[in-house]
Image (cartoon, rainbow over the protein chains, first blue to last red):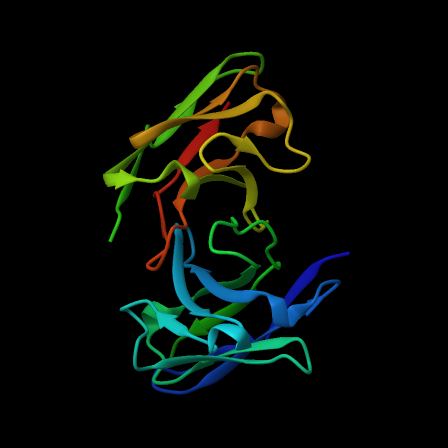
Length: 121
Length: 107
């Protein structure tokens, strides 16, 4: 069964750091780009970050709201993608989801259940 | 950035009725990269439609998508009780990947 599982969410103070993990199973992880989205409480969905495959040079892209603070990376040997979040703000409070795709025209069909990040003093 | 605007914000209907949800893009988009998701409380989004009109695996035939350029529609032909949820349209043609603000379909 194809599966993505997010972990690492926690309650943290503003200005602190946190690293989220996205673990894939049931598919060839290194063939897929990994994308992070988030959803603030009672709000819509927002794209956060993208990392391409090793074959694509592990290209990374970021939403303007997180650029310079968040870093996406991957370890294909462990089938894990990471989202390192630094200088966290209260606006980063959200449920964070990861998803995947193999080709640019593929939709985001497989989602994890998400991990909760709460930024509060 | 492609801004997606959904209407109505809330749609109140009854089981058995037909639902039409609208999604308007701020600029013309390729139909290849327009999707619809369903989300229920406490659950991850579920892909319903991709490429504007293609049903995802396991999606009932009562769900259909249509449209092109800047105007897209999700239609649910006969509402079932489990269809009452929030629906998002989504553009995935390249970053930034954007979503509409959602339409809440309620009884």
